[in-house]
Length: 343
Image (cartoon, rainbow, N blue to C red; front, side, top):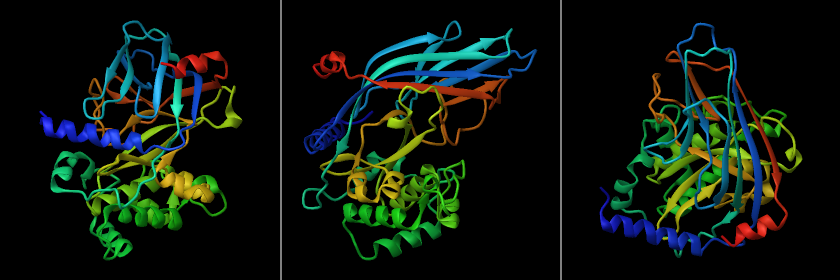
C-alpha cells in the first residue's frame, strides 16, 4: 500500500501540473464507436472480446456513455495495473459468424500546454524512481533498454545532468533523426509492433516506433515514462463513418510538474509546433488505454499483449484478428457544450 507521504507527493505534483497548464482549449465531441467481429468459425465454443472504452483523465471528461449494442452479459472491466477500462463481452457457443459491440459517448477534451521550466523543476530522486519503478522498466518487449540504447542516450545527453534538459535533448534527437510514416516520401512505414530496433534501423516508422525509442532512451537516463493510446479526431473526418486509426503519445515525469505529455509524431509532422508538443497535446484526440506487454481484465488465455490497439479477440483461447472498427464523430457546438463546461 502506498504511504501517506507518497499520496501527498502525487497530489502535490498534480496540483502544480494543473496550475501550470496554460491556454487550455476545450472541445466537446459526440462519438459513435462500433466493433464488428467477423468470420467466427462454425462450431466455436467461446468468443471473448475486449474493446476500447474511454474514461476520465486529467485532459478529458466523459459526459455520457451508452452501450448501444453488445452481447448479453457484457461488462465494463478495469486494468489492474494502468487503470483504463474495457468493454468486455463473452459469447458462448455462438450461433452467428459475427458479434457486434457499439457505444456512443459524449466527451469533453482539453488541450494541455505545460510551460516546463528547469528553474522550477526539481531533480528526480531515488524515492521517485522507486515509486515509478514500473515506468522505468528496461525489459518491456520492443522497448528494451539495450547497451546500444544506453550508449546512444549517453551520446545525446553528454554531460547534462538536469533531467528536464535531458528529456528535451532526447525529444529533439528523436524528432530530428526519425520520421513519422505519414510524412510520405522516404519515410518508413510503421513496424506494426512499436519497435526501438526498427525505429533506429529505418530512421522512423509509426508513432509507437518513435515513442518506443524515446521511452527506451529516457529510461536509460532514469526518467520515468509511460505510453498512452487513443485516436485523433481530424477535422477532415468529422461526420464520416470510418476507422481513423490510432495515435499514441508519451508522458514523462517531472518533479514539481507531475506527468507531462509529449507527442513526437506530431512534432515531427508539424515542425512549427515542436515546442508545444514537447510538453503539450491538442484537444482533437481521445484517450482510450495505456501500457504495453499487457495482461487484460479479465486475463486473456494467450500471452501478454504487446499492444492493445482498438480491440483484442480470442476464439476458443486463440487470438482472432478478423474484426472491423468504425468511428464517427461530430463536434458539439450547441448549448450542450456550455452546460458541460459548467459541470
